[in-house]
Length: 279
Image (tube, rainbow, N blue to C red; front, side, top):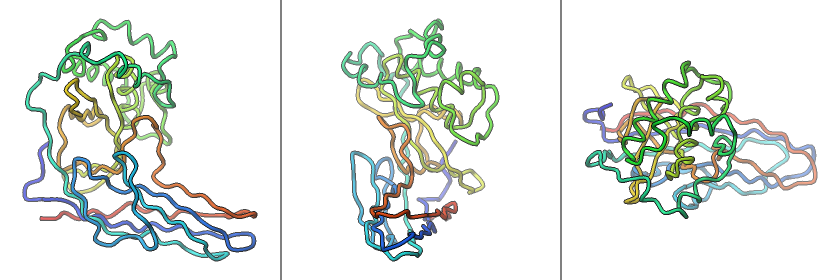
């Protein structure tokens, strides 16, 4: 994958809306929706969403709408953003040795989490593979890449996210399953690894929601690993980051909370954002 010639970034137009209706009274609604972080990309807000505040937590950025509303209405989350991805490729193939990670750091990433199981026998069987105890980090990633592509024989779009174990058992999955299986076995091996979600821009300029991984080297450099799209090591103009999932593997793009004694019914309108190249 090579960066698009002459394209400097992307203008992204969101047209999301929340339709709501309370049985009675006027509820207070709190919406939290993720915004493009300043990580591997420069972000400009051309048109912010109305009545929303921008907040940060760790490396993630998000908007919060928190207001008392009428008994029935529409909350518009329309906004226009410009994102300028920063290309990244490691200087060489010397990513260090897995044995150079401290035992404390390895244990930190070896938690039992949804989608990234550490203690099921099926997943543990991977540790019987000859390549699993390779100490050279770059060589280990290449071997894991080959193994996962052989294991997930049926790369296809899934109705719902399966997680690492189901991907292992069924041999099918999309970018979520490739990423979840990689993160799971990397953490089993004691390698710091996390999940990024956002969008991938195809060469024909069409966009799709996408997930990929990152590993950290002993030198504390994060390196992108996208097994689904055969990209080991590079962050290019094609990638737009929306959020980073490190110790919560399932952060929803949008969250709603209501404060009211009666039921509030709601419906999301979430069309795919419109991406326009910036030259």
